[in-house]
Amino acid sequence: MIYCHKFRILKNEETIPGHRLMIVDAPGISAAAVPGQFLHLRCSDSTDPLLRRPVSIHRVERDKGLAHMLYRVAGRGTALLAGKMPGEYLDVMGPLGKGFTLPLPGERVAVVGGGIGAAPLFFLVEELIRECPPNNMVSFFLGAASASQLPPASVLHSPGLEVHTATDDGSAGYHGTVTALLESRIDSGPAGFDRIYACGPAPMLRSLVRMAGSLGIPGQVSLEERMGCGVGACLSCACKIKDRSADGFLYKHACTDGPVFDMREVYYES
Amino acid sequence: MRVNLAVNVGGIIMKNPVTTASGTFGYGPEYGRIIDLNRLGAIVVKGTTLSARQGNPTPRIAETPSGMLNAIGLQNPGVDKFISEALPFLRNYQLPVIVNISGDTVEDYHKLAGILDRAQGVGGIEVNISCPNVKKGGLQFGSDPDSAGEVIRAVRRATSLPVIAKLSPNVTSIAAVAEKVAEAGADALSMINTLLGMAIDIKSRRPVLGNIMGGLSGPAVRPVAVRAVWQVYRAVKLPIIGMGGITCAEDALEFIMAGATAVAVGTANFVNPRATIDIIDGLEKFMLENNIKDINEIIGIAQ
Image 1: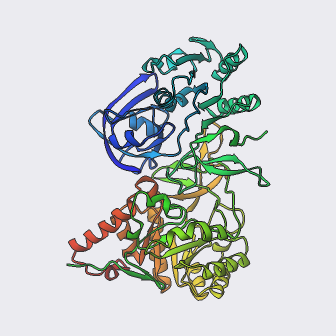
Image 2 (image 1 turned 180 degrees about the vertical axis):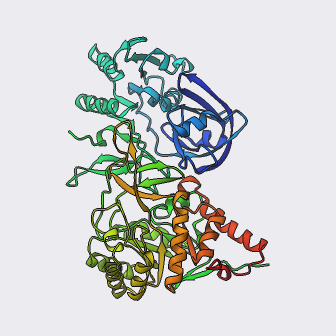
Image 3 (image 1 turned 180 degrees about the horizontal axis):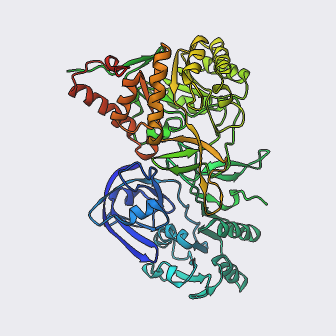
């Protein structure tokens, strides 16, 4: 079921500099959504800007019928979203895309988010805590440019969950990239992982996919590409996926084949 | 009062004049989860070629004022896979399926038309002689009236299905191309394909699109499209499927009054997945309010 109508905004406020948390009253969406899926938002009734904006589902509160979106105010579309007031209605399409698949019982899981890429992983971590047996250890690695840009992980609380942070400027947690932090944890002893889930900037995912590949750890990544329709009609959001053809890859689409793909399938030029 | 919305586009009987623009509606199932496809007058599916095409490198789209540039590059699985994998789904619906075809050579178009002529459930062929986004094929044929005629003649020889020539606005005289394809045996015309355009990212100092240039669509191009329909309606007697930036019934009516027998909704589907249905309902409402019994009464009425 794809919902496509106007939903009431309950909250839309800056939570970290340049980022906003929007909560919409959308019981159908919150009930149907799985982690990794996204919503396609119409920023205004005008034809300029024309296209919808895809925003990942940050969290859901199923008991209250709410869907949360954490978004970065990056351009004209998201600036219009930022101007929406609680009580206004927002044209939302979704939930769209293929989400993450949950790990096998007992697997030790690393969830790795860089920048605003961390947004959909909160939903994933909450689902892992809820759905997985207690012997699934979950480690959430969060990376950002600096301390002020880290989304607060205090909303997630569970005895089985460890949260590790990394910042580029060293103002909080590990000084360096979140991929380097994960690598250091793996190197420093038996703290291995059986599965990795990740979302973040393209260079981060590239190095993470390479590292996971060399260590033989399976996992999934959520990819981003400029999107049009959100439903697989326009074929804009093409992602390179490994293939036995002469090119070595074929184009699949973030909106319907993804945005979540198996790490081993993602094609990177050498 | 009951109003008649049905139209005949060169032998394709549509229960209402609203169809989809090729490349904006996939093969049906993409939007079939949101709207009832049976309500459409017809469906025009994603452009099909003889063999599979990967399409262009990303970014494939760029947003522009009230419009967008696209350079998808005709990504499609090829005609055989289209027939075996996409067409069966569409046979479940009561609406004409119009297949848009592109080729590198005149021979490609001829072969494609022959293959589709033998396939079950194809209601018409839209011949893309106007794609601005591939190196070969498409626009090279559509920009020269004689080559456009040659392609249509080759398609005509291969099929008895209704043949629609899709015209490019990227020409000196669209009416001259229309006249040649009419002579060559086209049953109908569709226009306009996208306008060739480009955008530069001033931060990276590079073109935005992976393909550098792309096709402009959306409300920004609508006046150009209405003008093209107006000119071609005067030049040839073939029915026209008008398109270019149609988002609502009022936009569709502009095309119909300029001379279009039917309209296609393209980019608007991305913004409002129910755009086609809203337009069908809006046309009916307009007719009731203005005492128009038959949509055919107002085709070209602005002329």
